[in-house]
Image (cartoon, helix red, strand yellow):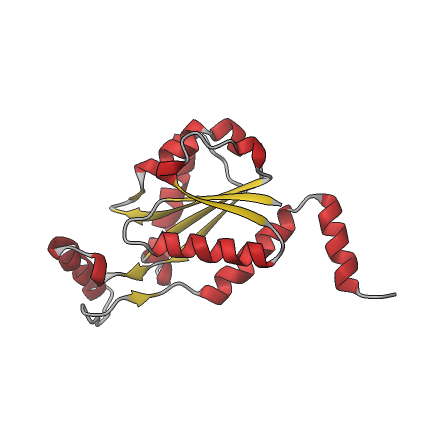
Length: 193
C-alpha cells in the first residue's frame, strides 16, 4: 500500500512514533510518505491507499495544526482506511478516568474535524525535560508527583511500548491491505503445498 503519515508534535515524541511506524510499514513492503502536519495543507490524498494521522495531547486537546489537516481533507480521508494515533503521557497509566478522558479527546477531535478514522490508538508518550522550558518542566513535575512518580528532571523518560506499537501498526496495515495483497500474504504465510 501507499500510506501517508501526517503528524504534529510538541517535544518530538510523536515525530519519533511516526518515524517508527513508517519504518515498520516500509519493512513490510509498503510505500510511506511522512509529513509534518504543517507541510500537509495541499497534499494530494488521491496518491495514497491509507492514511495515519498522529498527534499529541497537550492541555486536553490535540494540536490545532493536525485538526486543520483533518478538517480540510475530511472527505478524502473518510474514503480511505485511516488510523488516528493519539500520543500522551496519560496513555502510559492504567487509570480508567485517564482512559475515558483520552477517548473523549479523540472523539471531540474526530467530531470537530469530520474525519472518522477506522481505528484510534492511544500511544504512551514521554517526559522530555530536555525540551521543556521552566514552566512546562514545573507542570510535568507536578503531573509526575500527582501520579506518585519520582522523576529525574535531568533525564528524558520514554513510556512508548515499541514492540506493542510495531505489532499494532503491522496488524493495521495487514487488515487494511487491498484484498489481492491480503490473499498473496496468506499464500506466502501458508508456505509450499
